[in-house]
Amino acid sequence: MVLEGRVMVNGRVIDTLGLKADPLKDSIKVDGKILTRFEPKITLLLNKPRGYLATVKDPKGRPTVMDLLKDLKWRIYPVGRLDLDAEGLLLLTNDGELANRLAHPKFSIPRTYLVKVGGVPEERDLARLKRGVMLEDGRARVVSCSLLRQKEKNSWVQVVVTEGRNRLVKRIFSAIAHPVLKLKRIEFGPIQLGNLPFGQFRYLTTLEIAKLKKLMADSV
Image 1 (tube, one colour):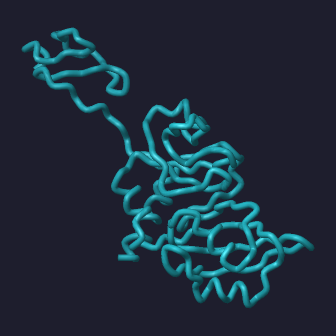
Image 2 (cartoon, one colour):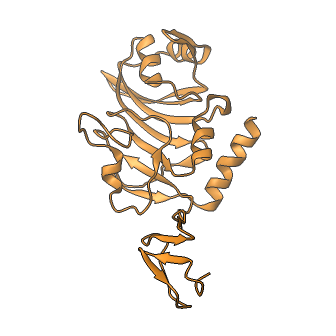
Image 3 (tube, helix red, strand yellow):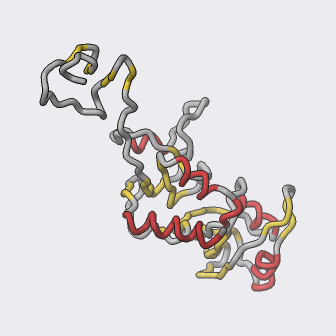
């Protein structure tokens, strides 16, 4: 094809064998049709700080998580929600199938949060969350919740939910009269935040992605 003049790189016909081109940077055409740029499937974990939206763009011009990933070569998208004032583990990927499956309610991916709430919930309050509380968009329940530590005016609770409904954790604690003061996601399925610094990211390993896919397969 090269010798027949059917290949173009950056608008120039290539007729010399052995010429190299970078599919990430160069426009390559064969018979007038541009080749799809090579984009490996990547999934990464970001420790989202407070004050950043978990979205690609914001019409109001507020900071988004993409501002923390400006040097990344590939376009990726957040998986699910994490509120502006929430922090912690956020997955981002360019694997559309993986993203859709992770966000789909039927797979019930467990999400673990550390929650600072006003006051100190009693055991009966936490039991209500396990049984389920009624919200404006239907009943919601937690898989588990436990009181970690308490002070006079606030306390920390660890809670696990399997839904991605908008502001779910905040709304269920409001339902038991203990408003959320701080919210941090520390686990998403088998993926753990660990000690990754705020605003930093790392790529998921092949083993971690395999664990995610196995979790979804087992949930079907």
